[in-house]
Length: 236
Image 1: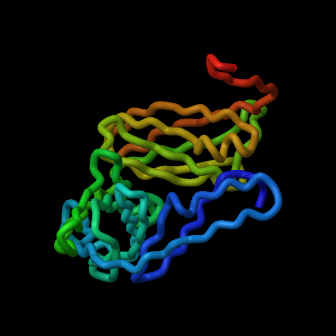
Image 2 (image 1 turned 135 degrees about the vertical axis):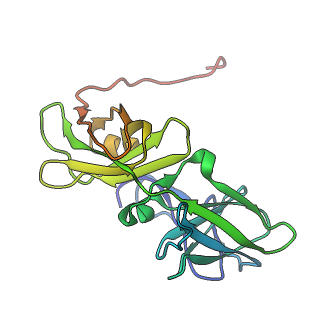
C-alpha cells in the first residue's frame, strides 16, 4: 500500500474486532500490528423493517460499534431478522447506507441511530425501521477544468440529522444519483478521497420535494498550491 493511516479489522462470526487496536500508520517499509480478536459473550437480535409496511428488509449489512471502539457486523436474513455477536457494553446499531441504497432506502442519520445496552446480558427484539426514498438528487461531479471525476463517493445528509444517503460518481461523465426524502440536504464528495486525488472538495445544498428529482452539479477544485509550515508550542 502507499504510506498512510489504515485500520485493519478482522471479521468473523462469534468474535469482535477492535477499531483502536487495528489502527496503523505506515510511513515506509513494513508495519507490524498484532490484532486482538476477543470471543463474543453477548448477542443483539432484532429486525430491520420497512417503516411504512413493517415488511422485513433482507440482505443488509448492519454495523455494531461500542463506546469502547469495538466493532461487529451482521446481515439481515430473508425476513429482515438479524443477530450480531458482541461483548458487554453500549452498542450503536446502524444499517449501512450503501447497503440500503440499492434496495431503495435512505440511510440512518446521526440522530436516528439506535443504541443498545448489553451490560447485563444479550439484547433481543431490537427494531430498526428504514425509510423508503421518495425523491432523487442527481447530477455530475467534475473538476474546475470540466473533467469528470469517476469512482468518488458522495455523501448527502438532511438538515434534521435523521437521514443520510451515499453513492458513487460513475463513468463516463461523472454522473451520480442519490435516493432521498423530501427536505433540505447537504451534499459533499468524500473529503479524504478527494484530497488523495489532489482535489479540494466542495459541497452544495439542495431542497427537494417528494416525488421530484433535483439536479445538483458538483465541482471540485484541483489543488495547485500548498501552504506548509510548522506548529510549535510556547516552549519552542
